[in-house]
Image 1: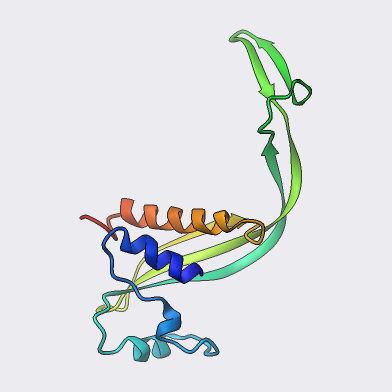
Image 2: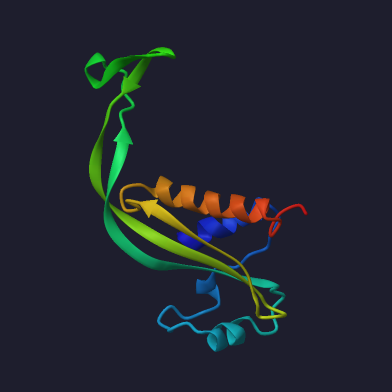
Length: 147
């Protein structure tokens, strides 16, 4: 699902992409030589790799989305009266993802980023948001899309 959604997001920017499961056996331990063999003879200019770099449990602050009087209070300061919304801290699983782009011709690392996804098992939207963040960052860096 992750790879298919990533490919769809790239396709929206007119980038041809192929999910790795169509090129590689899922049981393989990936390394540079295996990837090179899998893409040999194909019109592929770059390889994008996202891997799980780690995971942890973290306490995450969630601001209340309700405007219930019991969940907010007012603060008076030199700037006037401000409504302050309260929230709570919750324990969540946080995945750290590492994404890298390699140029095929030079075999050089072109770009990398680390990002965190909070409770990916609770929401497909978390994965969609992660993919969008990565693609938007690639586009802003001039690595995909209209250049």
